[in-house]
Amino acid sequence: MSIETFLQIIPLKYVLIYFGVINVVGFLAMLIDKEKAKRGSWRIPEKTLFMLTFLGGGIGTIAGMYLFRHKTKKLKFTIGFPVILITEIGLIIYWISR
Image (cartoon, rainbow, N blue to C red; front, side, top):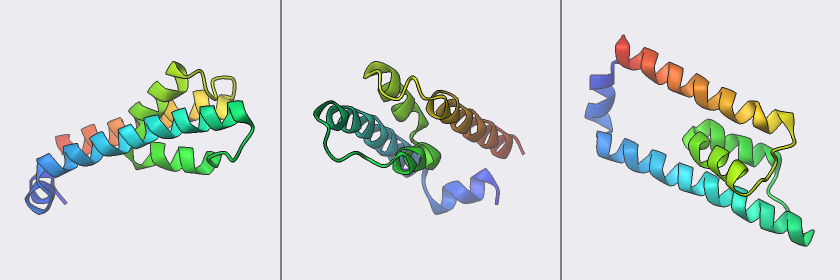
């Protein structure tokens, strides 16, 4: 599917709203998980944090990770989140340039 066809089905406005919302959700998930960790209560599963990143929330989860100093000592997060984000950006650039 070409970018033109995709944007005819889903207007750019809605794509941008989606990415804005998913990044805010990812950012807030990192904040909530950090606060829960401080209190020793229920935590957001790591697979959920990765799923938010995978679904397009990489900027929000990475920003939250470093702003709240949460999961910064775990390599699977400090490497995994950026790898997912860079891969997604590369795929988007490839798709648009086709």
